[in-house]
Image (cartoon, rainbow, N blue to C red; front, top):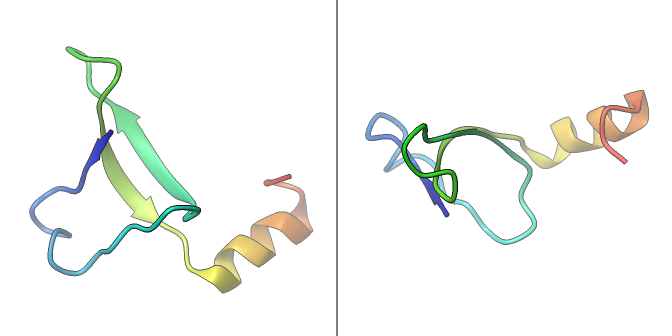
Length: 53
């Protein structure tokens, strides 16, 4: 389960299958903060360069 911080809350929508960067909470490992969401062209570039498989 992830939480979107207030500064990005209204601007970012997360859907199933999206590629995101998260940082886990220190208190609860089952929860995290969403730091960044990649767009489709960014995901394709990461796959071409071998960062994602």
